[in-house]
Length: 84
Image 1 (cartoon, one colour):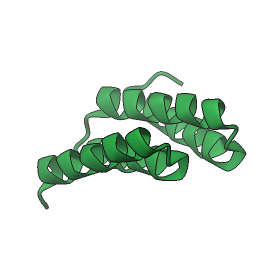
Image 2 (cartoon, rainbow, N blue to C red):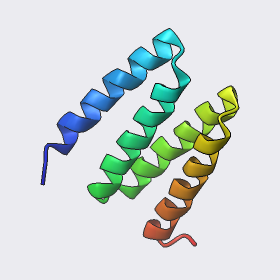
Image 3 (tube, rainbow, N blue to C red):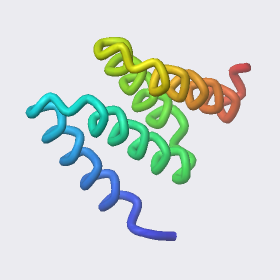
Image 4 (cartoon, rainbow, N blue to C red):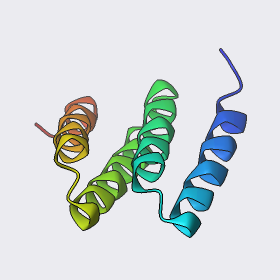
């Protein structure tokens, strides 16, 4: 296992910087990476929250592909939580 918490901190810094400069692509990517890392840690509730936030950003910037990907990851998170 790698340094998951360090990875999350790094992705959160990238997310914050992307939000500050208005780089919506890096922002949704950072939310995705945080969610994936949390999913690998089996922290499905926190991963779900990250993917939901990714979805909100995708809506705000009309990023259709990111929106579809967020829906997919939200569905997978619910699956792992047994809420399908």
